[in-house]
Amino acid sequence: MTKKALIICAAGMSSSMMAKKVTELLKTKGDDIQVDAINVSEGDKAIRTSEFDLYMVSPQAKMYFPKLELAAKSVDKPIISIPPQAYIPIPMGLEKMATLIKENV
Image (cartoon, rainbow, N blue to C red; front, top):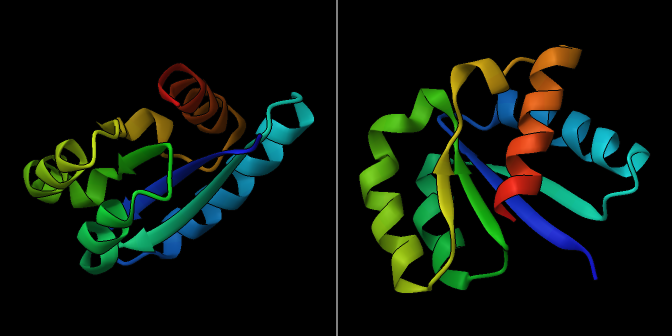
């Protein structure tokens, strides 16, 4: 069964690229994990639908983490803050993001 993770970002552009690249990396490693991305204005609603196994807040949206964390707790889903070093679209950053997802999904 495919696991699903969602990146919640300030605007959703950098997170869409990260989601695509990390999904590709995970698949090459044999991990059945799909990563998607949305902007923070849709984050609360997305969490409350409880469609994802893991919610992640990008460094640019960290000021919204407390509010999003409350939503995640209300549906009993994990939520994490992505450290800046795992939010870089280069091999090192993608590896860190993939590890973060695998440890929390």
